[in-house]
Length: 328
Image (cartoon, rainbow, N blue to C red; front, side, top):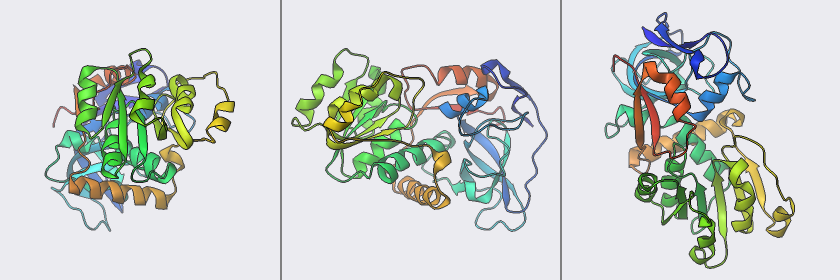
């Protein structure tokens, strides 16, 4: 089979497309023939070898999210069999061979039915993005019906499901995007208002949109750029959940006092087994009901993984970036 392998840490150029051994499923494991592979920003951080949460042994095949058809199951696996359409959310499962490949082996706990209403590309957009969105909104922020949530970067892989889930929960959603195409995605995901975060002074609209109260919750994808501003637009007692950050910032701690604000980070690597299971169960239910409707943005051939790693860190996200194996 063909796939991506990195033999050293570094820039996108370390990702090489090559022939790899076919992984064999052991007891309690499932082998999936992947038709689509999800690319997450964390994949790029892991590739550098400096990611705080995870450093794989070299050589390794990247990726945690995908969708396809069960190819073979190991001893003791029940509830899933060859030919089943599934999505894979492998983060936190130790027996994982890597998603950037035509075939992947994963512990059975990481394999879930893919509703017939969803494409393989949509299935590859579920794992890390949707579970992160659920964890940020409900396990961390404790979002309640009637509250107002600002989703900074709502057109990206996490932002779209966060918008859909928050809207379904009865919150008033204000999403931001950096392009007209992205704004359309956010609006279609259920946002009541969409702001252009590339426009100067765009947050000045929030007092009018919130009746002067400010927002109850901020889901923040780029904290090194936005955190100081987030605290300024919070309601008293508001919460900021940091989902992503790519650098340092100058920060005024007094803003947390003025708003009696709570600033918290979230990372799936820190979720307990019960928290992960709960989030996955909720996400699977929302997929079946149609609340979660993953949006696929750009699709690239698997062999162009290096280009995908460059692309996913660029502004102007519009849905999920997907890699497609040659045999899909």
